[in-house]
Length: 267
Ligand SMILES: C[S@@+](CC[C@H](N)C(=O)[O-])C[C@H]1O[C@@H](n2cnc3c(N)ncnc32)[C@H](O)[C@@H]1O
Image 1 (cartoon, protein in one colour):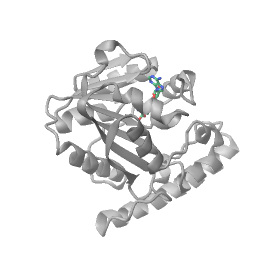
Image 2 (cartoon, rainbow, N blue to C red):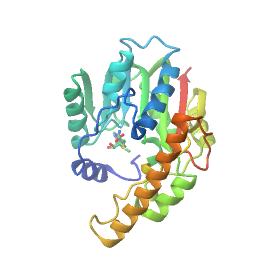
Image 3 (cartoon, rainbow, N blue to C red):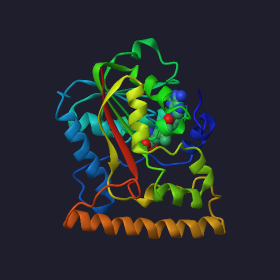
């Protein structure tokens, strides 16, 4: 089963971007608000398990800024799998730059080395499952990497709300490589895969910055206008985060939240 984008798309995407900054939840600036909330989320999930020296696998780990984070913050031994050679090379470089040991396997996760099956205590993915037409088949494959009782955390962008709608207007091509899924659909895919869903919910109030313009020709008038619109929307998200940082957290919702996080356990 191939994803709606295809390997060529990922190879091309990763060869034209810089390495991401490392994730540091202690950086207090507003841009880092989503990462600080993710840290809160993962700290809660991993407070229930003895993470130190346990094995964590990131599926679709291209250029991952998350692997060093999981190793440093929780003491996981970190691994990643991705079929993009450029993406894997970059993931290795990010680990090296962070001074963190880890293993990156360049392979199709539908046909992984058998030594990787039932090998991990935790499996995470960020923005991978929603690129497949059959979400359950995809999550079933993810769960094969888990040991019994292992925990899976699946993070996807919320394309059913306003952010999906804006993505569709700004760049239809990018919207079309996603399967719009709501929290029930994502939870169901985990349930149908024989996993016990512990939590599946919309995550953080808003973040328009997750929309992207990769399909619009860079430098064109259309691109300049859309980029300005996106920059203004991102400023608006930052204003909301300022309110949340200084006063109170706003509710998450299917309408405005940028992500859906699902945590489940293998029975
Ligand atoms: C949206 S990206 C993940 C994003 C990346 N981890 C990040 O946060 O920037 C999805 C990744 O899944 C990988 N992928 C898609 N299908 C795959 C497959 N069958 N086997 C291995 N990797 C796959 C792609 O190469 C791509 O790097």
